[in-house]
Amino acid sequence: MCTGDGMNTIIIGAGASGLACAISLKKNMPGCEVTVLERLSQAGRKILATGNGRCNLSNTKAEHCDKVLEFFSEIGLVTRTDSEGRIYPYSNQAATVTELLLRECERLGVEIITDCTVTGIDSMLCVESESGIFSADCVVIAAGGRAQSALGSDGSGYELLKKLGHSITPLYPSLVQLTSPSKHPRALSGLRVKCNMKILLDGEAVKSEYGEVLFTDYGLSGIVTMNLSDAVSRNFLSDNPKKCIAELDLIPDMNEEEIAKYINRYKNLDGILGKRLADIISKQAEGDSARFAKYAKHWRLIINGTKGYAHAQITGGGAKLCEFDGCASKLCDGVYACGEILDRQFECGGYNLNHAWYSGIKTAEEITEKYNDKN
Image (cartoon, rainbow, N blue to C red):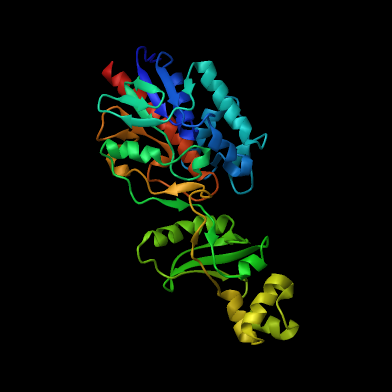
């Protein structure tokens, strides 16, 4: 086993990727000194909020899922998988995941320094912070994105990489709820429907998905909405955004002719859509059964934005992947990046958290391999 004696690694960020990297590195090289610097007063805080407090830590269909599950099995975490392939701790508590990660850090001798805001990294790999200067042989930037800054990631990691010469692609809130000026979502607040939803930009469909949509006081939520939100966010990044519409096929299992026949027989769609939703569309159709059927298949709501970074699950965009060899910077020897800070995003269902864990593990492997090559 490589001991890593005398080697010092600083990891910036005690989130999913940072903690996975710290644990993996200490296991690979027990003699390596590993220090994690965390801006907040508590490590792993964002993990506690994932999966609505249940921590959807991976998915059976995610790349490198087996590697991630092996990592967690080795620290004692037992998991369960739902019918969609989403993997959760057996306890269904995100706190269990955080507790085991921090316990393993303590057992291995990983030092975690909280309330420590990093302000810069120089060419000699000296990490400057409000708590002092830390010298290192390797620096891992695992500071997350801009999403939910109250839970730790405030976007400062991007500035650290930019100062080192790295490029950052345009950033935007992703996996986030959509806002609408329409009164209809508010009238339907709390109602969930299974439908096909499209995002139209100046009338052109740019993205679509089938699944559950949730109507809210501000607009639309639910997994489908989250997965389509990147198209909306990117549109509103522009100085001249296109007109944005969410088009919902509320009855995907029937065509317009079949729906019109149903309306002619029963005079409404209460038996399919439920009275609240059916009444709204009926009023818009003004008693015309053909128009009623058309609206049920092509119901449109104006979208004027998203709920922003404060509510987004992840940040879209990030450090350009072409400037990294794996997780190692091509521009600064000894600098690595992992997790959300990289320009790599996935849909809902545990895929993004899986990427965070795996990229942390992979970074530790790359550091170990480089150390072995030198020695």
